[in-house]
Length: 505
Image (cartoon, rainbow, N blue to C red; front, top):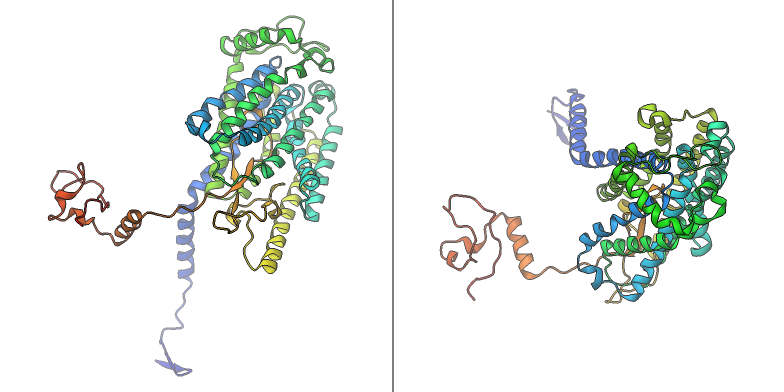
């Protein structure tokens, strides 16, 4: 043994240790993969469903171009019974007049967005849809700054401006006879118009429940929003009678017959529009032979997109879901150019398309990075000014969305005990064609109040941690255990009953 600084050192201290880091890295990699495999799976499935949702939205409107109102109602109405089953009797218990009014505003915004998106998507190419959809980011930024007075980082403004520049370049570069026939200016404008109510819905969802101090059931909210979307779609029927739609214009008296024809096209695969169609200045011809494939795959991808978005946020973070929404743009553009996916409808992107995609991606990266910077800056300011953590979503559940500024968290709210209540962003599903927007949807609500555990729950938890069986399993007290509990020697092993009810006084 050698002495160094008065302490004994082992004689083999010079022995090389290069194998330990390698094995530890391997074990740490395996441990990380073991912990994160579900998140990786959900992220990949979210990306695939996101691209599939975008691609088959276009294929759906191409297969049934004359039934926009029918498709809008179909893609929205299927969510009403879905959420009704999930919400159960809470639909009526938690629906007071003030809440229903707020649900109605959300349904109106989302319903108008879906109406204009399906109508404009008929004559807007898939690649251009992907790029135009990014305009919801600068729109939400502008509305949040004007209506909510929110602060943004300089990089966010630069990113939003870059996105707008990329969209302008994309529209200016959409030339050529085939592209011009597919991208009609009126319908491109209608598709862009759909983003305005979508941005308004995002901003409204951030402030709608600031005065509501109860626990909000997400399924109740989504049921009422979907129901109001269906009503809004009915009230939006006059939009289809506008003369500027040209051949796509539809008299109000023909709406009922159009719904019947759409049902025959989808379920009976019978073409309804077969004459005086397909030529310039005429309606598109029906392609009802395999329309059901595109429609039902779109509905499946739309539902999967909603489910995997929530799973990614639950197991990872909302920032990861926004990263996936960013990656969706270039992958969707590649999918629209693939003959394997689009078949004869595939359109090869030109140099201008790649240039526009690069500009928009640069704007998205700048916006996301700026959002992280402003969040860090505001958190530091709050900690130095108040000496406590800000009442905003935790780092695990925060994201770089237009509505993610920590200033969005309401101040001054108090709980029943006089303390400030905690706020959180709750992910929600998007019914209908609103799911084709690029941003995941969130709602700013009170975090659920922590509920005190009963004495029975505390005792049962302590017994589980100790690894002991319930005292009622002892031979002297077994006759006091509730009926149906397991007894030794019964021929099978059940989970021990940790309940302490029935003990003698």
